[in-house]
Length: 350
Image 1: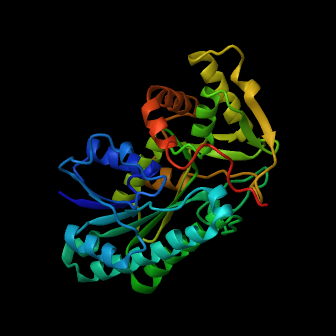
Image 2 (image 1 turned 90 degrees about the vertical axis):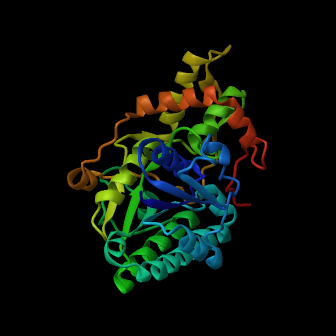
């Protein structure tokens, strides 16, 4: 039985990965998470005591503890998802993003390199460091074209700059030291258990509470939406069959403007939880985010051609599942909102 070290496994994408691994594979999972505001053990229902799940509350910037985790658990691979991930928060406090996303990644790379050097035979040949990143490193597209694996890096926010930096570190450790790495860059994820600072869960919960639905600027910014379970399947496919040293872009083939997304959410809620008035009446246009990228769109042709992955969910089916999950899991939502975040706007420059 193989062991996978997952960093950030109590976060949104990480917890979806861990749930999938425990339910549908024979991997043993070592889940390393600092449990910041967005890391939540409640996103791992029934798994904290599962025999194939080991939880380590560790900061990836803590070199001594990270090295201990490698020594004690002897992973066959690492999938690195731990990151500060919200653009608005990066505008308010970029230092945390540099520390976690850049310094933390360098700590993991060094720990992984030291560990990998000591492996022998198949264990050394089969080891992988899979770094999970974002399409935001490529910057902003015009009305035409798609991001490919060859697109130049042009990050425009502190968040995307920190992720671009971490991508470059991973490639450098491969080229300089030979560490067997894989890099994936994904489009906007959505689905169950997402922290409600992000667009889709924030709009769902605000609408149900009768609060305004704030749309930045005209709401004409375009994003490619990827259902989180589709992303998880892609990550595992890359880990198992991806070519060492390669980058794979993962997209959902679902380009929508932010306004379209919120309008569609309102229509679903009108059907499922009808109120006195349509929820779309709560939409409010507010001042745009500083440096807001206009459009992201991914060409996911490489991962389809080489590894046979395509998304299973359309935006319509994925969004329907997402809304229903939030309606069915009010307790999880309330426990999250009992913390320091109350749905207020972040990332406003005074």
